[in-house]
Amino acid sequence: TLAPFPPGFLWGASTSAYQAEGAWNEDGKGPSVIDRAVFPPELSDFTVASDHYHRFAGDIALFAELGLKTYRFSIAWSRLYPEGDGALNPEGAAFYHRLIDEIRRHGIEPLVTLYHFDLPWALQQRGGWSDPRTIGAFERFARTAFKLYGDRVNYWLTINEQNMMILKGDVIGTLPPGTPDPQRTLYQQNHHMMLAQARAMIACHELLPAAKIGPAPNISCVYPATSRPEDAVAANNYASIRNWLYLDLACHGRYNAVAWSFMAEKGFLPHITADEMSLLAQGRPDFIAFNYYASTTVAADLPLDNHSAGRGREIEDRQLPGMDRSVYIGVDNPHLEHNQFGWYLDPVGFRVTCREIYERYHLPLIVTENGLGAFDTLEAGNKVHDDERIRYLSDHIRQLQLAITDGVRLFGYCPWSAIDLVSTHQGIGKRYGFVYVNRDERDLKDLARFRKKSFFWYQRLIKSNGRR
Ligand code: BGP
Image (cartoon, rainbow, N blue to C red):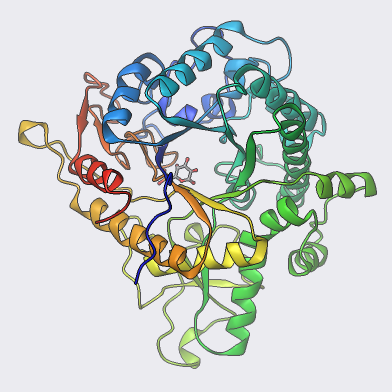
């Protein structure tokens, strides 16, 4: 029999500042790396996004109607500090006061990400995460956020998907195009981000003893392509570098052996001091947040068809962040379906992932992203029939419940996304929300909001605390 979801389980939904807010240069906000990035002309820009900045009151009312217990959003660092670490922008600070008040007024628990991909442009121009001064700037920004909002925010997230920023550094990271020795630079940036995170966690515990803070990486379930031992090594290599490197540093303050020897062999080892390692050991999360969308399957080598049957073909590089053919090769998983963007749908892998994280770190878990991106369409009567999304979420929630039954301590689940927003690489066409936003790539139309079929489905699910 399935264990019920615990009482007080935080059913939620997520957004991020640059993907939802818009108002990119209003009320004193400084530009971020996203505002300065060059996107292909057919993609939506982020200047208006879903206009959440101006419509947040209506949006939060919709989230309350949906029944959310928590709402995960991020603070745009350059709204608070337009220059990254110069003077505080009072209007930016006031915006998040209003937003948090509104969330609280509806009895919803705010879950705040400090940094979700949008490094202030001013910091990027002086070297971004390659420059150790960015560590201090992040700590200062985090301390300001704790002081401003700490009386009403109990749950904080440090850095969203730091591992994706490193593994896909050329696309979502802060690696300027043409950087020499890009991988070494990225692993140095990674080390700096880890130090910044440790300092933020220490500051949070010092300023807000009752609050809780944790990291928020993207974790994938990694399978060997076959039962061939070499494939098991490849899968272990990939999981150690893709997943555990970040959480081992966040939770145990140390680099795992596999990731360390990978960096050493490739010449990617960051410059590290003993003081930094002791700082990493002092920064401790209270919980682990993670984003899960899909699983990954890897093989040790090619050609694949020389070995056992059932191994898939090689997949494209872009589907395997941090692909390095000498340590792992991403392959198709013939046992799984994939969505229209090639992501492997794997609810069972979600349960496996919950177990793996919990057994490795023994900290309570919260899922901060999980969802299905699709080209939703607004049909007659302003209806959106997103049955595929319902199926995806329902299958994943069932596996979450199995993980709870297994004994994993899970205290919340926040699908991506609360409302339609701009996908970083696929624009507004790729939608995830429970609420449809009426715009397309270039035509902002009226930005009106419509409840999708999944909205009513999730509303019922929350009301019954997870019974489907
Ligand atoms: C995660 C990010 C989100 C969001 C999501 C969906 O990596 O934290 O910001 O973008 O993925 O990805 P995409 O929009 O590329 O489909």
